[in-house]
Length: 179
Image (cartoon, rainbow, N blue to C red; front, side, top):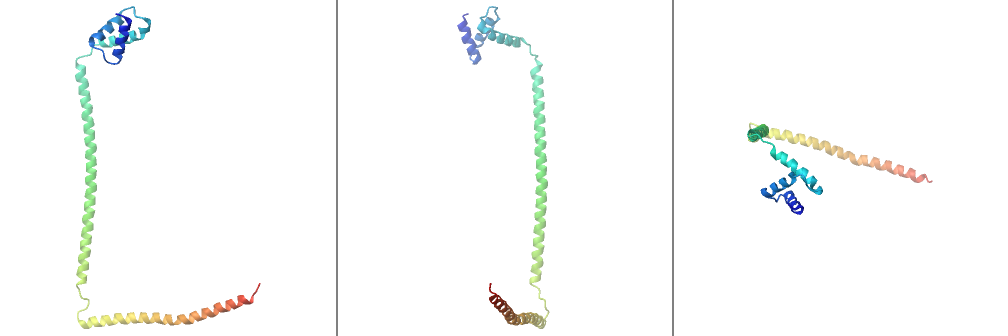
């Protein structure tokens, strides 16, 4: 076979475009003793490939590898299922706590509103005379506090007048002192 034809087949082989018949030709060519010097590297490569092809693969190898891979897959699925289960359980706990707090809050609001509603409808006095007396006491207390406030307000002009006198005296002293 010509060298240029072999070079073309090697290029096709490298690109993955050769047929089985062309590959056998390449193996046969590189098995010969007289290979051109520039194709020696390709000869080494094809000889290595030929040795690999000659290695016998046991029949049970595929089955054992398949069972090992299936075992790994089952372990991976089991561990993924455990992680998902633990996350689900964690969410169950958290949602249970949230629902419990919501129920407690709702019950507290309900009881508070019920208690306030019961107080609004009740009278504090048994008779209208008692109500009059309680109102009179409250108004007298309010009046006395208001009178105390007015008494304090009556002293304000006196205090203001004293302060005004003091300020005027200070200003007169500053005017008399000239630099």
